[in-house]
Amino acid sequence: MDKLQMTAQNLERNGFKTQVFNSAAEAKEAALALIGSSSVGFGGSVTVRDIGLYEQLKEQGNSVFWHWKAAPEELPAVFRGAHAADTYICSANAILESGALLNIDGTGNRVANLFYGPKKVIVIAGENKLASDYNSGIERIKKYACPPNARRLNLKTPCAATGECNDCNTPERMCKVTVLLERPSNAVKDVHVLLVRETLGY
Image (cartoon, rainbow, N blue to C red; front, side, top):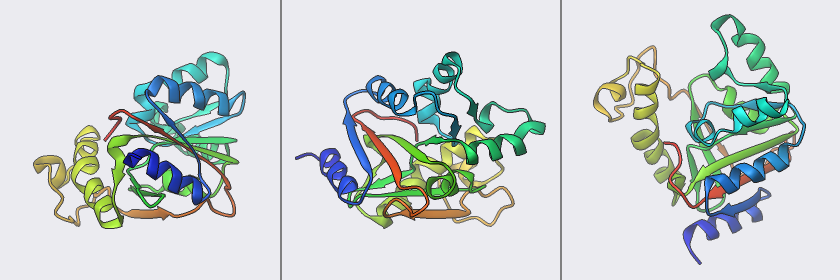
């Protein structure tokens, strides 16, 4: 059994409804089937952006809320809409082989919605997000996720300039909220994890 399948089994054992796909296109179709006509909130995610879910949902008439697509004056309402949506979609910074989701946020909207707010959560992640344990997961996030994200957001942080984390204390630091989701919470029990045998996102 390979690591992706083993991780999927451990996620399932821990209460996450988990599927493994060979391609992002297959995962996208599965996500669309899970969403149906429901309202949808999006967390910041290069993975979700790249597979085109937002555009597809807009085209088919779903009510969607994504701060990446909002004007500055619309942000408060969009954040509230995403939190109150029927379904919330995002990726994960790291997925531990033991069957847990590890994420680091700056604002906290994404990690909060993983365990409180929506009725259903869908997490889409490529096999590049796997990590053997908590410490390896933190290392993967700080080394491979945060520096490119900081550059994408034009943040004034050392990692954006050097590509390496030095646990900075700068005003624009993006590593402020760390959440390890070991099981679906009592408030959001319907959590789907769609694992893909591709490299997706950071």
